[in-house]
Image (cartoon, rainbow over all chains, first blue to last red; front, side, top):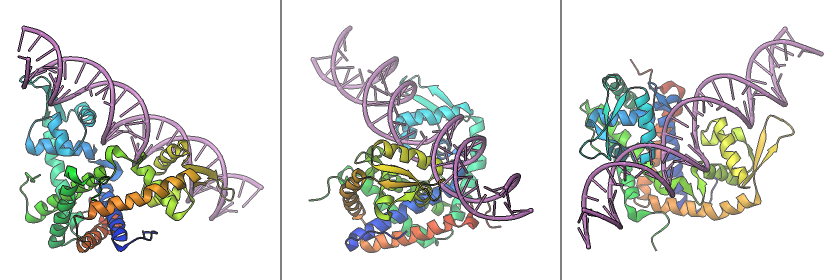
Length: 160
Length: 160
DNA sequence: ATGAAACCTTTTAAGGTCAAACTATTTTAT
DNA sequence: ATAAAATAGTTTGACCTTAAAAGGTTTCAT
């Protein structure tokens, strides 16, 4: 997709990098979650189960913080996981504001099947890049991501 | 976010690359569209206006193809743009199945203000990477994206 | 101890997203 | 010419997503 935009070199470069980054990431995720689903799980449901699978029971806010999602969103995603008996909510008695979310035996069993498949899919999909290229990509994205998370770098308050 | 997963080097690398790629992209887009909005436009609305701004009037299917979105989705996004008088639908008389979407004068004027700001935001946000790094990132993502779009590379049919 | 502030989750309203089923139109094959 | 197939857009149902307001619960100052 050529840019159809005339600007300075820096502008054209930034625009092209942006387009390639966002389109490729979207294609990647569409390929990984065809029809938005992965073994019957949405990306958010899978992410939630994965966090619990590797870190153990957490309260909703903690899960949301890991996944960069809003509290209201977590309520819905966990509702849907609970309907399918993959997780269980348990009000925390030490702090009754919190709700600890546990993987059920069913959820645990599902992840034991699905997670290794997920890893295999990622290895296959990244195999078009050499290990060195994957490392470079990871480093660049880490740098970009950290800059975006730091409160200083908002696009509106461009440096004077 | 360390991986909490023990696997082969390839597996750990793929998983880490995946996490960095998706999280950083998400942070980037959240930063670019705070609260999911950009000058009052959602990302999809902005994308639609941008395509029309640079390519001229197109039918809905063509816009959807450019943005990798489903037909039903385009119906809704264009509905919302039409409500705000940024866009106008016109049934094509040569082929009455098609609906050509035009930018209104209002939409044109909005893009004339917003698009240059968009480019400036991108330049600012990518400024943590050198031009060379941006070029490398673009190349890697292009390679990754092309592999994901080719029908052969579905994650399910992993190479034997 | 009591009121205010902070915190966690839920609810709501607005919008996005897909697949699948449906309508209308055009093309193609007979 | 007409039936069948392909195409363009819409509708529907299920889910995701956010911000903002509202409900309990806890903590902190007084």
